[in-house]
Length: 296
Image (tube, rainbow, N blue to C red; front, side, top):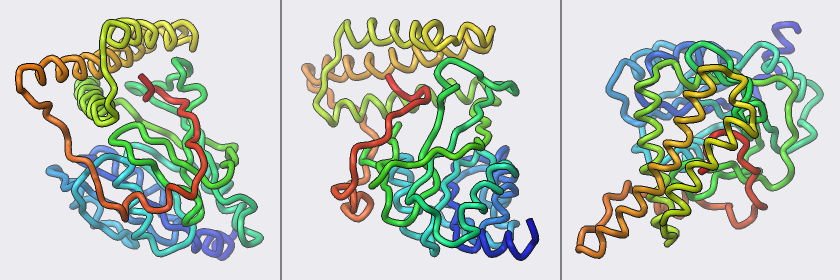
């Protein structure tokens, strides 16, 4: 590929990266996206060196916004992008050369044939690829034309809704999901609280079936059915963490219902109720099915 060809292909794409305290990852992520015409970083008021690192990169726009969940942040970020085609990354993800070349090939002859594209992810857990546990089928809609997709109004684990089927690209991105076990365990607890808040907002209840059976099935499904056992010790630890997250979510919901009877209201995170953030959802179809470890 010549330099002029690469410039022509990449000039149509705005890359979006959302961040919060990602000093360990953000530099490598932005390095992998230098080929894009524009990179927009939307930061949730990081307290580490993330803002300093980001602002050292040329051709990167840095903005800060209060975090109301991944869906809200990414919808808002898409509305700020200047190009019609948008590529979405998290700070702990990397665009490989093979994926970049595949994306550029889509634009080489003009407009790509599809409105949205799904990208597979190769997931790393403590420096090693997780080959099973459900992550062998992990994929997310991350490349789309403006207006062709939108995230639904959910505080956590929201899957992109698209106007038409999103074609799966051949080459995956890299996802360095866990390099600090303690930090990841804390993230699981935070996501469980957010998930519980979503369940509470939807008016659903929790009991023995949710607290015990869902948690047990989560472990059995990821460890045995989805072959997490073949990932060795990492698979065992990882699958138990996912089951714990499911248990914690439904136990929190149960505890809130108990407390309400005693006049204690639940401690809920703030939701984004701005109509502008969720505009266009009514025009889209059903969400893509989740294939990662976020369900529970």
